[in-house]
Length: 242
Ligand code: ADP
Image (tube, rainbow, N blue to C red; front, side):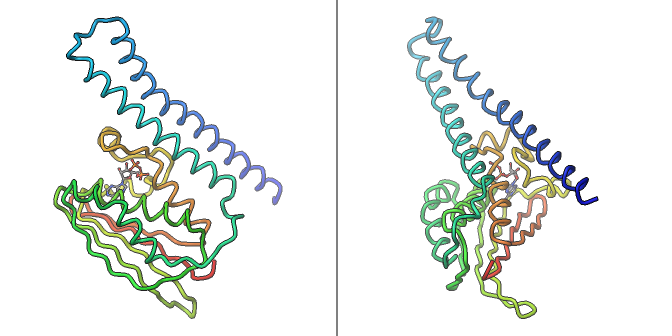
Protein backbone atom coordinates (compact mmCIF):
# COMPACT_ATOMS: atom_id res chain seq x y z
CA UNK A 1 0.00 0.00 0.00
CA UNK A 2 2.88 2.29 0.71
CA UNK A 3 3.98 2.14 -2.94
CA UNK A 4 0.47 2.77 -4.25
CA UNK A 5 0.16 5.79 -1.99
CA UNK A 6 3.47 7.06 -3.29
CA UNK A 7 2.36 6.79 -6.91
CA UNK A 8 -0.94 8.50 -6.20
CA UNK A 9 0.90 11.37 -4.59
CA UNK A 10 3.29 11.58 -7.51
CA UNK A 11 0.42 11.56 -10.02
CA UNK A 12 -1.35 14.25 -8.04
CA UNK A 13 1.78 16.40 -8.03
CA UNK A 14 2.16 15.89 -11.77
CA UNK A 15 -1.47 16.75 -12.38
CA UNK A 16 -1.10 19.98 -10.39
CA UNK A 17 2.07 20.85 -12.29
CA UNK A 18 0.34 20.31 -15.66
CA UNK A 19 -2.60 22.37 -14.52
CA UNK A 20 -0.26 25.15 -13.36
CA UNK A 21 1.59 25.18 -16.68
CA UNK A 22 -1.68 25.44 -18.60
CA UNK A 23 -2.87 28.28 -16.34
CA UNK A 24 0.43 30.14 -16.63
CA UNK A 25 0.27 29.98 -20.42
CA UNK A 26 -3.27 31.30 -20.40
CA UNK A 27 -2.51 34.11 -17.93
CA UNK A 28 0.53 35.22 -19.95
CA UNK A 29 -1.31 35.08 -23.23
CA UNK A 30 -4.06 37.52 -22.27
CA UNK A 31 -1.87 40.61 -21.66
CA UNK A 32 0.43 39.68 -24.55
CA UNK A 33 -2.51 39.50 -26.97
CA UNK A 34 -3.64 42.91 -25.80
CA UNK A 35 -0.15 44.40 -26.16
CA UNK A 36 0.19 42.96 -29.65
CA UNK A 37 -3.27 44.22 -30.67
CA UNK A 38 -2.66 47.77 -29.41
CA UNK A 39 0.77 47.92 -31.05
CA UNK A 40 -0.65 46.68 -34.35
CA UNK A 41 -3.29 49.41 -34.39
CA UNK A 42 -0.62 52.09 -33.89
CA UNK A 43 1.68 50.47 -36.46
CA UNK A 44 -1.02 50.41 -39.13
CA UNK A 45 -1.54 54.14 -38.71
CA UNK A 46 -5.29 53.78 -38.13
CA UNK A 47 -5.03 55.82 -34.94
CA UNK A 48 -5.28 59.61 -34.91
CA UNK A 49 -2.09 61.08 -33.43
CA UNK A 50 -3.98 62.45 -30.42
CA UNK A 51 -5.25 58.93 -29.62
CA UNK A 52 -1.82 57.33 -29.62
CA UNK A 53 -1.19 58.03 -25.89
CA UNK A 54 -4.32 56.02 -25.03
CA UNK A 55 -3.07 52.93 -26.89
CA UNK A 56 0.42 53.44 -25.49
CA UNK A 57 -1.09 53.54 -21.99
CA UNK A 58 -2.80 50.18 -22.62
CA UNK A 59 0.48 48.68 -23.75
CA UNK A 60 2.27 50.08 -20.69
CA UNK A 61 -0.39 48.74 -18.27
CA UNK A 62 -0.49 45.27 -19.80
CA UNK A 63 3.31 45.09 -19.84
CA UNK A 64 3.24 45.95 -16.12
CA UNK A 65 0.82 43.05 -15.53
CA UNK A 66 3.14 40.72 -17.38
CA UNK A 67 6.07 41.80 -15.20
CA UNK A 68 4.10 41.21 -11.96
CA UNK A 69 2.99 37.81 -13.22
CA UNK A 70 6.48 36.71 -14.19
CA UNK A 71 7.88 37.96 -10.85
CA UNK A 72 5.26 35.99 -8.88
CA UNK A 73 5.81 32.87 -10.98
CA UNK A 74 9.57 33.09 -10.33
CA UNK A 75 8.93 33.43 -6.56
CA UNK A 76 6.61 30.41 -6.58
CA UNK A 77 8.98 28.22 -8.54
CA UNK A 78 11.80 29.12 -6.13
CA UNK A 79 9.52 28.03 -3.28
CA UNK A 80 8.67 24.84 -5.20
CA UNK A 81 12.36 24.06 -5.48
CA UNK A 82 12.46 24.03 -1.69
CA UNK A 83 13.22 27.45 -0.28
CA UNK A 84 13.26 25.42 2.93
CA UNK A 85 16.81 24.35 2.34
CA UNK A 86 17.94 27.88 3.05
CA UNK A 87 19.05 27.95 6.67
CA UNK A 88 16.71 29.68 9.04
CA UNK A 89 17.82 32.59 11.18
CA UNK A 90 16.21 34.52 14.03
CA UNK A 91 13.78 37.01 12.47
CA UNK A 92 11.77 39.64 14.36
CA UNK A 93 8.33 39.80 12.72
CA UNK A 94 7.62 43.26 14.20
CA UNK A 95 10.65 44.56 12.30
CA UNK A 96 9.34 43.08 9.06
CA UNK A 97 5.90 44.55 9.76
CA UNK A 98 7.30 48.08 10.06
CA UNK A 99 9.29 47.65 6.82
CA UNK A 100 6.19 46.40 4.98
CA UNK A 101 4.04 49.16 6.46
CA UNK A 102 6.56 51.71 5.18
CA UNK A 103 6.70 50.30 1.66
CA UNK A 104 2.89 50.18 1.39
CA UNK A 105 2.30 53.58 2.99
CA UNK A 106 1.69 55.44 -0.31
CA UNK A 107 -0.67 52.72 -1.58
CA UNK A 108 -2.69 52.89 1.65
CA UNK A 109 -2.80 56.69 1.54
CA UNK A 110 -4.09 56.65 -2.02
CA UNK A 111 -7.14 54.72 -0.80
CA UNK A 112 -7.34 56.63 2.50
CA UNK A 113 -6.85 53.42 4.49
CA UNK A 114 -5.73 54.03 8.07
CA UNK A 115 -3.68 51.41 9.89
CA UNK A 116 -3.57 50.43 13.54
CA UNK A 117 -0.54 48.36 14.40
CA UNK A 118 0.12 46.60 17.71
CA UNK A 119 3.39 44.77 17.87
CA UNK A 120 6.00 43.59 20.28
CA UNK A 121 9.41 42.09 19.61
CA UNK A 122 8.49 38.69 18.19
CA UNK A 123 11.38 36.53 17.06
CA UNK A 124 10.96 33.25 15.19
CA UNK A 125 13.42 31.00 13.36
CA UNK A 126 12.64 31.74 9.74
CA UNK A 127 13.62 32.76 6.23
CA UNK A 128 13.59 36.56 6.15
CA UNK A 129 12.81 37.25 2.44
CA UNK A 130 9.99 34.70 2.43
CA UNK A 131 8.47 36.10 5.64
CA UNK A 132 8.65 39.61 4.18
CA UNK A 133 6.91 38.43 1.02
CA UNK A 134 4.13 36.72 3.02
CA UNK A 135 3.41 39.73 5.20
CA UNK A 136 3.63 42.07 2.21
CA UNK A 137 1.07 40.05 0.22
CA UNK A 138 -1.44 39.90 3.10
CA UNK A 139 -0.97 43.60 3.85
CA UNK A 140 -1.38 44.61 0.22
CA UNK A 141 -4.58 42.54 -0.02
CA UNK A 142 -5.93 44.26 3.12
CA UNK A 143 -5.47 47.54 1.24
CA UNK A 144 -6.62 46.38 -2.22
CA UNK A 145 -9.79 44.62 -1.04
CA UNK A 146 -10.63 47.29 1.51
CA UNK A 147 -13.15 50.03 1.01
CA UNK A 148 -12.11 53.60 0.32
CA UNK A 149 -11.38 55.13 3.74
CA UNK A 150 -11.37 51.73 5.46
CA UNK A 151 -9.23 50.40 8.30
CA UNK A 152 -6.53 47.83 8.66
CA UNK A 153 -5.38 46.26 11.94
CA UNK A 154 -2.15 44.34 12.45
CA UNK A 155 -1.37 42.46 15.66
CA UNK A 156 1.80 40.58 16.45
CA UNK A 157 2.12 38.84 19.79
CA UNK A 158 4.10 36.12 21.53
CA UNK A 159 1.92 33.27 22.74
CA UNK A 160 2.26 30.02 24.59
CA UNK A 161 0.03 26.97 24.05
CA UNK A 162 0.52 23.59 25.72
CA UNK A 163 4.05 24.57 26.59
CA UNK A 164 4.91 25.44 22.98
CA UNK A 165 5.84 28.98 22.03
CA UNK A 166 4.30 30.72 19.03
CA UNK A 167 4.20 34.10 17.40
CA UNK A 168 0.72 35.04 16.26
CA UNK A 169 0.51 37.39 13.29
CA UNK A 170 -2.94 38.69 12.51
CA UNK A 171 -4.17 41.18 9.94
CA UNK A 172 -7.77 42.38 9.72
CA UNK A 173 -9.42 44.69 7.20
CA UNK A 174 -12.80 46.37 6.98
CA UNK A 175 -13.10 45.51 3.30
CA UNK A 176 -15.38 43.69 0.90
CA UNK A 177 -15.00 40.27 2.55
CA UNK A 178 -14.84 36.81 0.95
CA UNK A 179 -17.88 34.57 0.26
CA UNK A 180 -17.68 31.44 2.43
CA UNK A 181 -17.85 29.22 -0.67
CA UNK A 182 -14.60 30.78 -1.91
CA UNK A 183 -12.70 30.77 1.41
CA UNK A 184 -11.33 27.27 0.84
CA UNK A 185 -10.05 28.11 -2.60
CA UNK A 186 -8.41 31.54 -2.33
CA UNK A 187 -5.03 29.92 -1.58
CA UNK A 188 -5.03 28.05 -4.91
CA UNK A 189 -2.80 29.34 -7.67
CA UNK A 190 -4.60 31.87 -9.89
CA UNK A 191 -7.85 31.58 -7.94
CA UNK A 192 -9.63 34.93 -7.59
CA UNK A 193 -13.09 35.58 -6.23
CA UNK A 194 -13.75 38.31 -8.77
CA UNK A 195 -11.42 37.91 -11.70
CA UNK A 196 -12.10 41.26 -13.35
CA UNK A 197 -11.92 43.25 -10.09
CA UNK A 198 -8.66 41.54 -9.11
CA UNK A 199 -7.12 42.26 -12.53
CA UNK A 200 -8.33 45.85 -12.41
CA UNK A 201 -6.43 46.43 -9.16
CA UNK A 202 -3.38 44.62 -10.41
CA UNK A 203 -3.72 41.17 -8.84
CA UNK A 204 -2.01 38.08 -10.24
CA UNK A 205 -3.97 35.52 -8.21
CA UNK A 206 -0.68 34.14 -6.89
CA UNK A 207 -0.18 36.22 -3.72
CA UNK A 208 -1.98 33.90 -1.30
CA UNK A 209 -0.47 30.75 -2.79
CA UNK A 210 2.92 32.27 -1.98
CA UNK A 211 1.66 32.94 1.57
CA UNK A 212 0.47 29.34 1.94
CA UNK A 213 3.71 27.90 0.59
CA UNK A 214 5.74 30.16 2.90
CA UNK A 215 3.66 29.14 5.90
CA UNK A 216 4.32 25.48 5.13
CA UNK A 217 8.08 26.13 5.05
CA UNK A 218 7.80 27.62 8.54
CA UNK A 219 5.51 24.95 9.98
CA UNK A 220 2.92 27.70 10.48
CA UNK A 221 -0.85 27.44 10.45
CA UNK A 222 -3.16 29.85 8.62
CA UNK A 223 -6.72 30.70 9.67
CA UNK A 224 -9.11 32.95 7.73
CA UNK A 225 -12.34 34.47 8.88
CA UNK A 226 -14.43 36.68 6.66
CA UNK A 227 -17.80 38.30 6.41
CA UNK A 228 -19.15 39.80 3.21
CA UNK A 229 -19.11 43.58 3.28
CA UNK A 230 -17.61 43.60 6.80
CA UNK A 231 -14.05 42.45 6.18
CA UNK A 232 -11.54 39.65 6.57
CA UNK A 233 -9.02 38.44 9.12
CA UNK A 234 -5.96 36.36 8.28
CA UNK A 235 -4.09 34.78 11.19
CA UNK A 236 -0.77 32.96 10.92
CA UNK A 237 0.56 31.09 13.89
CA UNK A 238 4.33 30.60 13.64
CA UNK A 239 6.07 28.15 15.94
CA UNK A 240 9.11 29.92 17.43
CA UNK A 241 11.35 27.01 16.46
CA UNK A 242 10.23 25.34 13.22
P1 ADP B 1 -4.67 38.62 -6.13
O1 ADP B 1 -3.38 38.86 -6.81
O2 ADP B 1 -5.83 38.46 -7.06
O3 ADP B 1 -4.93 39.60 -5.03
P2 ADP B 1 -4.30 36.57 -4.05
O4 ADP B 1 -3.78 35.19 -4.21
O5 ADP B 1 -3.54 37.51 -3.17
O6 ADP B 1 -4.48 37.14 -5.52
O7 ADP B 1 -5.79 36.48 -3.51
C1 ADP B 1 -6.72 35.61 -4.17
C2 ADP B 1 -8.13 36.19 -4.11
O8 ADP B 1 -8.61 36.17 -2.76
C3 ADP B 1 -8.22 37.64 -4.54
O9 ADP B 1 -8.37 37.75 -5.93
C4 ADP B 1 -9.46 38.12 -3.79
O10 ADP B 1 -10.61 37.76 -4.51
C5 ADP B 1 -9.43 37.30 -2.51
N1 ADP B 1 -8.86 38.05 -1.35
C6 ADP B 1 -7.60 37.97 -0.87
N2 ADP B 1 -7.42 38.74 0.22
C7 ADP B 1 -8.61 39.35 0.44
C8 ADP B 1 -9.10 40.29 1.43
N3 ADP B 1 -8.31 40.76 2.40
N4 ADP B 1 -10.40 40.68 1.33
C9 ADP B 1 -11.20 40.21 0.35
N5 ADP B 1 -10.81 39.34 -0.60
C10 ADP B 1 -9.53 38.91 -0.56
